[in-house]
Amino acid sequence: MDFQAFSKLLSQRALLLGTYLQKNQNKKLYQAYGKLDYFIDPLITIRRYSESILNS
Image (tube, rainbow, N blue to C red):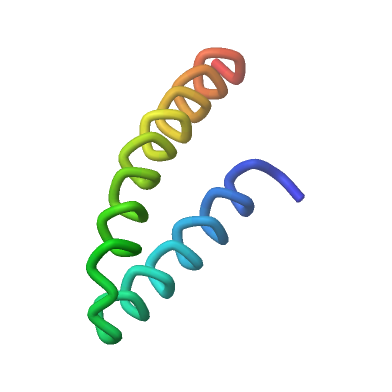
């Protein structure tokens, strides 16, 4: 499984989780999830950037 497929899967799962938490209005969990997303996102961006440099 390549990184692109993995990050796509990760973002799909994140989207589902976010929607679930919003619907159930679990505020504390939703806020914690938002913070987690805030940290994961730059990591994915950095990884993509470094891969694009390596592939060029």
